[in-house]
Length: 478
Image (tube, rainbow, N blue to C red):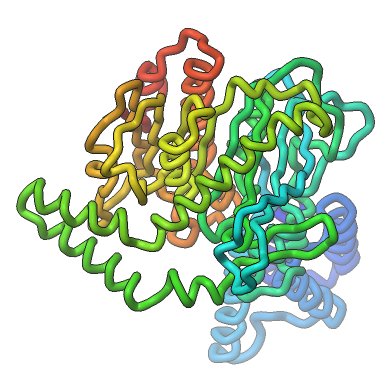
């Protein structure tokens, strides 16, 4: 919470008791001036946000009580008890809302580069699987994060309209619910020139039905260290994608109902979890794993998103000649990383696209063909701290190992959403699915591991990734 928000909350907590003291009428001007002054400063420096509405209502009530010389705790014990219970309830809402949904601070990037962003609309000749129209072709919005040369550009707001509208739609909220995010300061500038030099390219794939660019905490740090990140928005499979004409393509709920959230898929997932946890032998676990990893709908999504990644790589040479990134892309140094479903797409893309040098999966279950394949490129899997009954299908997905380098890491006390900005947006553990660990600790561990991994395999620098477990007690390598 911000400074004047805290002051207002302290005022509404303390002043009801002040009003119950005999003789407060001797100093009516003082509380009125104090409350009015803090309110003015709050709106000037903090700004209005809806999470503070309970506080504003209590403030109005206090002002009325002061003006009319009314004592809140006056009358019979029943009236006093009802007044106290009502006040406590309102105070709980007043303190909880701005705490649970804060105006948060993103981690400060530590690299030497300033950060810029721009968007590219990529139109492919691939058939669009999600829509019913057979003439539709796959279109992607790519958010390009890059080392920047800043002149007088302004910083971009946190999340664009596509992300915000889609996020609100996912939870059945009005878009205005997220207007308070305007107060969140990013470290990314809008459309500056790319810094001098050539930079290695990392392609990022988000989680299913999530904000495609809701990973500022990780991506800004990576870019500040001298990487260009091409953040794919998988159309109809993120919360929302904002296109150049102003249209927003939301998550396709009709496709979800028809192919994903079906009884058949639900039964397959449930039965696979039960069968895996009840299996008595490794062979039984392998059979269960193979069945679900190859036949669950996520395997189809993995293959589609892997093709999205290849579609981006297909156009890199063109962008390196004629776009705002001209002569800034080192297209011989390409890495990939992704979260959740996007992490699964990373593993698949390493199997399918020879132009990729190395990849990182952040808490992705490796759906698809990996269980029958062998990796030949450097790969880092960073998992959250999965708890029973979550089955570890990845043990069998990667059973054939890697002929190059394979790292299997875990961050203890973390959750599936720990790699996103969600734990900053929603400051409540049982809702944000981010575990008990401090979210900034996860961001630091993750970016450190990502950078050491890509520095080693993309830039061919000498690093020792395994040594990170001595630096971070929450990190371990399996």
